[in-house]
Image (cartoon, rainbow, N blue to C red; front, top):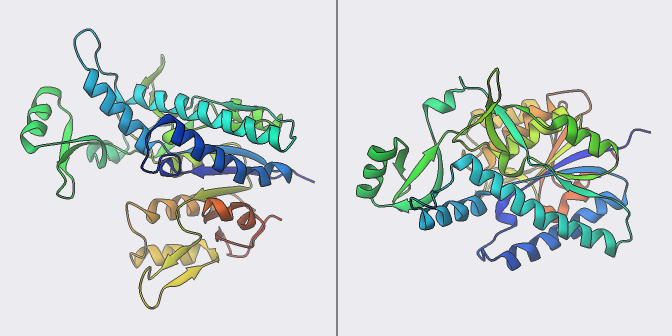
Length: 320
């Protein structure tokens, strides 16, 4: 029987929730690792993707604070790579601790992942992803004039730099990742959506952009031929008419049903919409594939078809 292969997308806010200290984030990851034990004990091969929004934001603040002629601030792609290494290190330690506790013999590795984007992606013409610290309007306009970066006013809280958020075209390290998974290793990859790069005839060039981690996880799940993509969020299920008297919980749902809900503007653009779009893309990418959107606490039960919102072509597929 074919082993189950699952890509799990973990949000950056699940790692840092208020307390930005290293100890607090490592403690959060230990709790996460314990939830993942169910997958490993039940012989499921997993690749873990994760967000990095709070972490890379703090790195950018640190870079700004220390910026000077002798210690220039690093560019965004390099800061993204820093966050991949930092979170990957913490997560490896947390998973190793969990494996020892459960007497499981498996290896875990973080792959610093470069994600290829298209130079012609329309996102480059319309930067929308806010990053880094807040500035006054005067400061932002001065920085735009000095650096050429784009800044926009952010919900009355001040001005922030905005960068493109292009769709992933390929995962440069997907062959390495798949080889490790085939050897039964636990892999941490596409951290923070991966480091965005463009391909030239000679090399790969880092790009000042941020890739949505759910779309990066979806592309990776395709390329490693996963059965299931699990997108973890703060709620157990996707809802329509959310927080209204006629709120409805989605359980087993089809691509066509979700596409209809998108036309009705049922999902918030900066919140659930990209998760639903990534879910559709993966479920639509091959026969027998499904996406699950749920909370960390319900993740394994959802894989068994007992929880969460499960998305497939026809709306009734589970891989138990």
